[in-house]
Image (cartoon, rainbow, N blue to C red; front, side, top):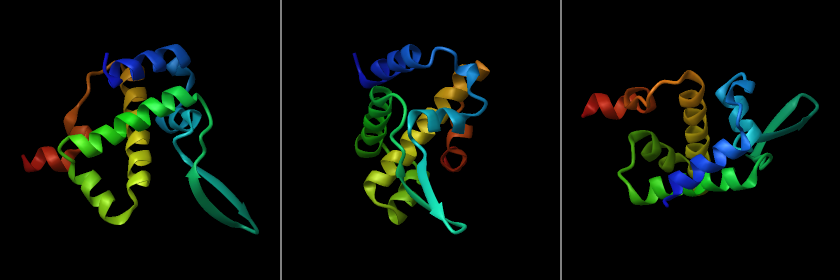
Length: 125
C-alpha cells in the first residue's frame, strides 16, 4: 500500500462524520495543521502548527506533502512558496491544503478538480 491509501484509511477512521466540520479550515485546525496563535496586549503572533488532533493522520498528510514537493513536478504555488519560506513551512502549508481539499471532496461529493487546485498551472499548460 502507498501513503495515499494509509492517509485515506486514517482519515476515515478518525473523522467519520466530515459534515460535523463547518469549514475546511475547521477540519485542518482539528488535525493541527493551522498556525498556533498567541498574543497579549492586542498583538497576535503566529507560531508553528498547533499539532493538535490525530497525530497519525497529520503525519500521513505531512509525509504526503513532503513527497509531493521532493519527488514530483512542483506547481507554481509550491515554487513561489519555496522562494519565500523554509522547506518545512512549505510542507506544512501543502499538508494544510491537502487536508482542506480532502474535506471538500468528501463533504461536497464532487470529484477532484485540477483547475480549482492550481488554476495558474492549468491555464499555462
